[in-house]
Image (tube, rainbow, N blue to C red):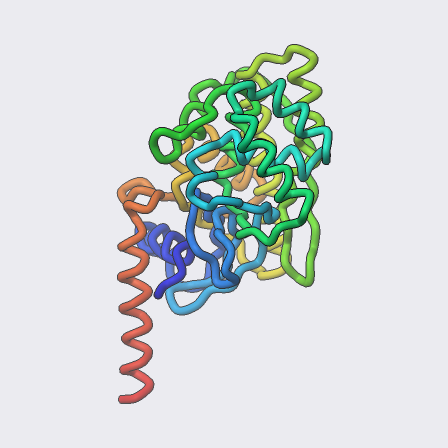
Length: 285
């Protein structure tokens, strides 16, 4: 099988008629990774024949898999636990009163025990957590609902962004957004509007992705970057990030004819398969 996020990258490359190696920032909800985790916030390097993973959004547990993808309030609790520890339990009661108590207790127990869970680096789940903490959307009734509603609420006039960290773990670049959460919660307490916080969240993603791609350019020597995955239906993210990357000296390509989400993935799969086939027949003939 062709790895999901590589196919996204190849699809964006094909639409823009790119040959040779590029960097890819692929952000979506779900796609199996080569390490058994659920990927979705990935920096890749590659072409139509092969790819390698240079970095990703920091892993978080995904207890219940698809169930958690449908219930953003679960992801909110997990991000808060990772960012601020045990205080998250009481805080999640205040922030998300509709969170069923039994479910919260069960999740806390699993967290405290360190139960082995599926791991995810999904950008979609990060949007879920943000939307739930802000009270914008606590249940996804359709795919991507939390992200769509978060984008719709963002106040374009708001300036500023939150902190993040870039960590190198055995040569893998980890985009860590845990430092964002205490600052975001402080904004909430100060009475900054939900729309203002939503915009600062978008701008934080722009900051961390730009910095991580800059680091990846240093490592790879590549300055062409393709943006793909369902998160790039989000116009704030797409335009603000494209602008920041161009300013930083990147050539930026995204999708216009072919959808950036899973509707566009078949193109990438087809072109990778045809390259692989051509190489196999070429090497034996």
